[in-house]
Amino acid sequence: MKKVNVNEIKEEPWQSPGGKYAAHFKGISIALGRDPESLDLAKRHPFDLEWTRVPPGKHNFPFHAHSAAWELYLVVSGRGSVRAKDGTTEVVAGDAFIFGPDEPHQITNTGTEDLIYYVVADNPIGESAYYPDSGKWKVNKTSAADRVVIKSHEMNYFDGEE
Image (cartoon, rainbow, N blue to C red; front, side, top):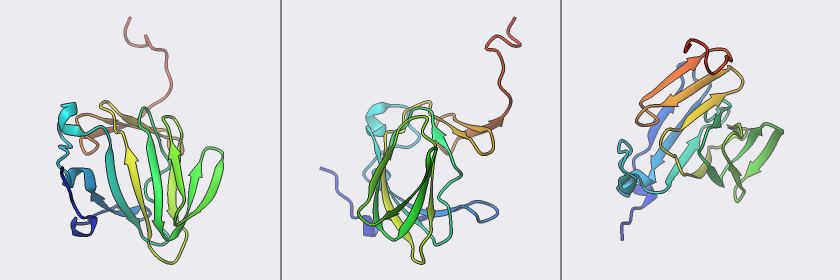
């Protein structure tokens, strides 16, 4: 058995250049031995567990939808709103919610204290994400950190091929 204590895992801060998006993460699965760079499924674990803290007034990420990943959330403390394709829903401690592939979502801390939640994701190899507000795609190469972001227009599959 592998065991870690979340309170002993170092927080990793993340923030967009303009500060609109900000969060702190604790990679629980990585602390348990997951190799985030490996393409070997035995070293990746079948899912990732992450602790996330979003400061008041901040969004976790831009509104996005994953191509193949599922994400399950459990709010531990604070309050926020979850934007989805069909509207916005308020969430508080004890609430759980899930997003499947092609379901755009974004979490915002609407409270005065930190919003803290756990997220479980299956993070399949070859994952990509679409950003409906900007029309961008993020394509992971070997990991979420090794990625390419592109913006283009819809075209025929064979354009430029024949």
